[in-house]
Image (cartoon, rainbow, N blue to C red):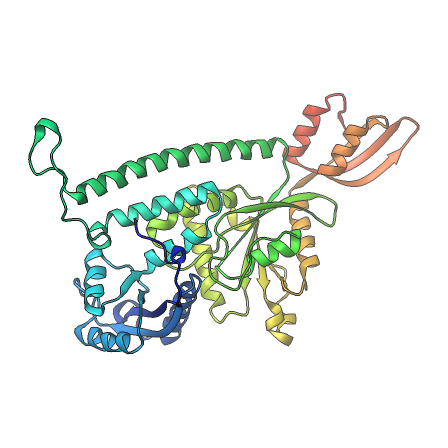
Length: 439
């Protein structure tokens, strides 16, 4: 199995070049979009500890089946790679196994494509059991299609077993068989982990708190916001894919109501199809969320394009029935990093969004109030008369609802409270001796 760059112990920094093949027929001459995409690839490469010494956008007239790049581009790159002592060339597109092998032969250095690069990042970031299993599965499925390139011992043969005789099983067949067996076992393990997580989710529903999920483009500041709201210490750095696994914490809103806040992995454009499954844990948490906070880096020059990419992923989830069709009604847009905009930040506040700075804390009170307001809008008003001695019922209403009015008599409390429909049903099941009153 190929070793991740992040797993290698190196005494010197690994020098890398990043190139973006840009097809004129597909993208035209949009230089700004190409530069933004290249910078994203540079950020991805830097996040695994490689030192970028060269980066470039290469315009393609056509994709060549053998090498992707044209002969002149290959000749120029060969000279540059040798001059800069490049160890790794990152090609920000999907390469076929043959293209990858041919480019390594041409340049005399390691070549990885966008899928391999993101797999390496995922391997370094995954922390939970499900995340680790998903990444290993994606790695194996990716490697199985590239055995010819990855392994150097494929011409060796193993002798026949017993009476079968013959040349035996070639090493490549043995390797492919072992990978296939491991993939089958991983899928079984993943199914068990998902069943267990499903039981945990059902348990949360029995003692429900509204779930608020953070989504957004990678490096938009989701983990920093998560830490600011919860006081947690989730890993948060100025790098792409700083977190991979969903993390959940309880927070208290201004009304005193508790909600569960869930941090998720960031989205990127053109996520390789092999890696969609590695998003499953995060996507399921988003699908279960009562409120979705779409965190945007409003100071980024391509913030609008990033927003389109995130909403596109959510829309595709809805088409696949992974997300309810009314998901847009549950979204609150959070414009993060307003501290980088200066005086322009004041114009960003609106009814459809909340402008904040997760670093300075500016706007966090407004965000919590907006979450509170959104949850309250889905509640219904109900009035109960209950014995003052019934402390458990009183405490339950204060914990799960919003008490609007209360009048205490000698032995009875008259309470008007706002509750979510499911909370009201649970309360009336648990405390059957208390019935709702006429308003």
